Length: 325
Length: 45
Image (cartoon, rainbow over all chains, first blue to last red; front, side, top):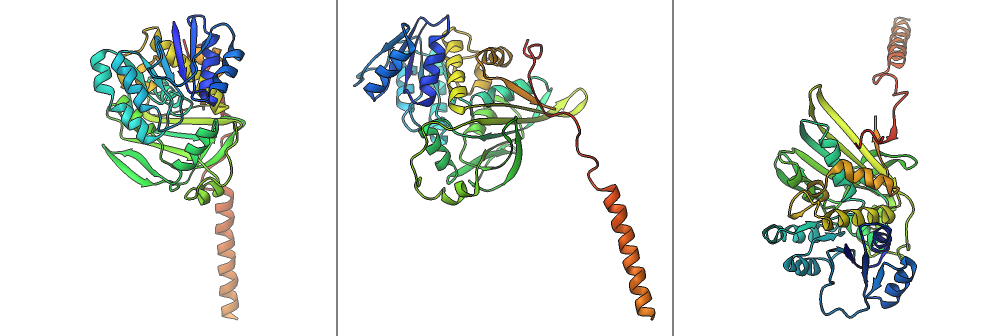
């Protein structure tokens, strides 16, 4: 399988590394607007890497393409690839991007092409955890997602921007828009992260989870933030974002009904968001490129991959899911 | 004198109620076991 990775930031580089160490992958095509970065990553990956230096007049030739460019730059390339019939994995967690990518669904469906949206730590892994939890239940009433931490600089900027946007929650069959930074909730993340205050933010999780779980009553997403994060959210970033942050975590709470009555399933994971996000994107690419997508069309990983086997393989790659209880 | 006696009775009753509430609490004992644990291979099979 020949896989292309476009965008070699924190997530793209990790995805390329994961792909290069996957037996089923024979070649990893690398693209980035920064030519020195392409050369640097290619030399680190070894024989399977195939660097392509810009400018790029056409889309990459590959069996599946991972788009890991910054938010706001993924939709046009995804559209071109879907039009050519190539499976695509995207990593953006911006609401506008996710919404525009979901709009490509009918075309992808018509062409029989899977388009995985938001395939990183959150969304991405959170979608798979939600599906795994839901599989333990007969019906799903509520899904609540929380996350803490950022990956590379682009992720840090997105984190900053999302705290001044508008949060999108699903409640009783309709969308609710609330100010980002409101709705404080204390969430317990997997050790050693522990407890953190989380707030509404402009996160796309509900856009991906609502179509995946028909009949769900409530879907919310929250982001851990400090007082300084919330205070400075309306301003431009006051200092340059760090090259890579430390540990982060996700927590997914699914409430529903089973044989024994009302049940609450709480799942999570802890890792460096860039590392885990790269692993999720790479594994999603392998699944789609191998023809194992559960259906064609655009959607989150909750709809496109088999949760148990995905989490098992992710665990073998070092990203381990945990259960609270 | 009556006022002082009533005040002392009121303080005593309030203290008694506070002691009962303090001992009983409202949320019971916090969980002493559980927490996060990795999904086992069996759960993912």
